[in-house]
Image 1 (cartoon, rainbow, N blue to C red):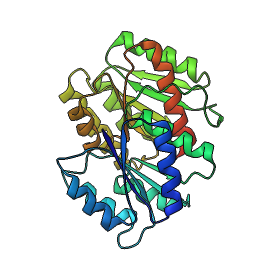
Image 2: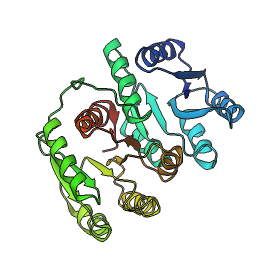
Image 3: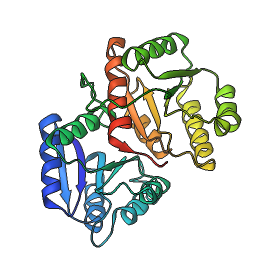
Image 4: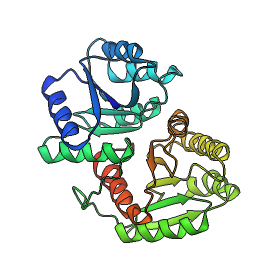
Length: 287
């Protein structure tokens, strides 16, 4: 059973989030607390007994706030692999930037309507709990003109299929593809910082071509993004592997998200719609 930790001192918000998740996601256990200190205590008490999949955490909580709790979680090798979604009623750029610098996976302005809560639960299911839920349409349709996705994939056939599926699901989005490690690193080190319009999302195949090489590339790309203050570009691992060790290693090396490729390539279009839904419609990124 998948475990989600929900930390928020607003009881009504916890109820609305819990009901939306339970409505959309099956076989899930939600553990609720009202402050950061209780969250850390509960996670410590569950070590070794729970398959911890996700932490949903409010920014402003008593005793320990979200950023203070996050600092403890990311310093502990037993918990740093758990993705953290930070929630807040504010979209203050200073807070958004600080949260990403401290290591959150995504920053979300709290939903207001029932439809928004459902949309959040659907996005969590696909983008963090590795389901293949088919989302037919985006909750909102932003203007995707002048947006782009960088796909890092060493399998040339998969690269063509990914390009085709992204264009089918998001026809206005430019697709940039790379299949060689040296070119990827050269792009991030020299070309990317000078680009006036940077990619809005990076998809990285974990086995590039081996797990070890993929993890190493993930580390190096993340270091370059941090060095150039480009945390506004989400870095998503997109892999056939659903091995918890691969997922944990990706999050430990600061991937924003991990998505499991559908076994049927026809499902990939739905995967990309889900990416679109979450990273364009739901998440707040630092400008």
